[in-house]
Picture 1 (cartoon, one colour):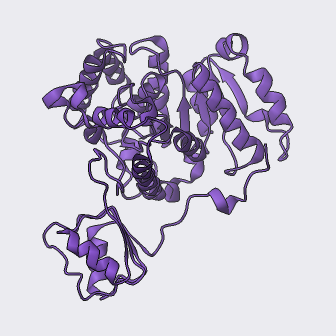
Picture 2 (picture 1 turned 45 degrees about the vertical axis):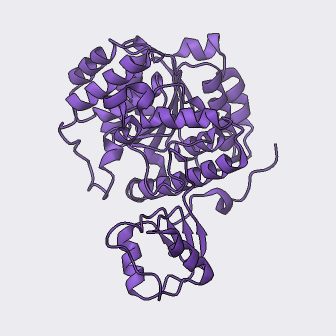
Length: 403
């Protein structure tokens, strides 16, 4: 393992002054008479009022994933010194998304055609049909542009929260995807997400079913009393198995509808602008590599990637306020040691607590603790083994993360 790169290589970038991502900002720049040197991302410039770009300085400008009234507009921009990367035709996903997904975005089409006609499922079908994890060149370029757009949108979406609450306010929740709805483990993870959100923490999960869905569900219902969380789980438990795609998704949408117009969660501090989603479901970061699993529809915002490697690193980079590891198998164990590498080297700055939920599981069934403690004790930043905790109590887990 090489030494980690310098911090400035990997830390999230500040918003670039030359990036234009909204029509309002674009119109303001256009009124100034020049777009030279700007990067214009994912805008519909074919909609009224269609901008007149013929007399505007566009030298060195980059238009990525923008739509124009006709092809001649893009050709004229190139002739006058701009670079144009148009949206790829024939793709079911945007090549430069300007915002994170919502549950409604991913579930679009379910009401009309069921699971197979959902946006999320249609993108997964396209992903499989074009090589899956090893796509052809055209598809690879489209996917990379999409994931870069998600990177940008995620940085934009989390910036206000982090500015107001700090990086230690973001807590990751990892665990098994196959945990059925209604089970003891599912209920524990839901209570965990509920308690963390009520303690003003941003809950981040991998966006899958099982423990991940449960944690986002708890955060989604954080403004409701505990008995309503239990009632919601009972409603979901009629479709416990995620492989029963249509019933599983229908149950989630029914719960979302029932609790859509609920109370607001009071904040102990003035709420940062554009962060209501963070306190009503938190963040999910899934991948279409695991698109055979139904979408987790309880997160407030969803940063869905094609690249699982980027997705995994992003989850762990954000979760600086600690991570809860509920019981899981190979994928969860991989995440334990991927996170441990970052903590050992201080790659992303200080880490929070590592809380392993279910003491017997993590010491006897999969004895991860016995490997992790000596590793952390040998960190170049000193003995970090004190950050490792094992508990069977959800509320103790929360106390360890919010103290």
